[in-house]
Image (cartoon, rainbow, N blue to C red; front, side):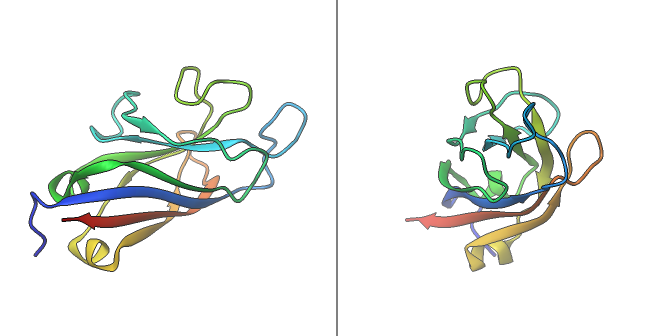
Length: 139
């Protein structure tokens, strides 16, 4: 069993975005970025956002999202993917592409990561798949 007080660095690695939806007004590819709310999916209090990956359906962020305890990771926290467009990342208004509660297990921590198969949008569609997260133990 993983010590709940142990520290873990969280990295948002990559995702795949649905190419059938028109994300930008011009019909172009979205400008996805990753956000995290350690308090869960009940509000819009983002604790951290990663950088944009401009005009792509296959963002690769490798964005460090902070260091938290295993207890926090194994709690109820929320992953978001947003389309940045001309908005500044991590500021309202958000164009939400995905919002999901991530469930992390001891096995995920032991393996160093997790891939969330589908992370639905609040409108019920699955625009974001294969959301890859890494967890690195910090001694």
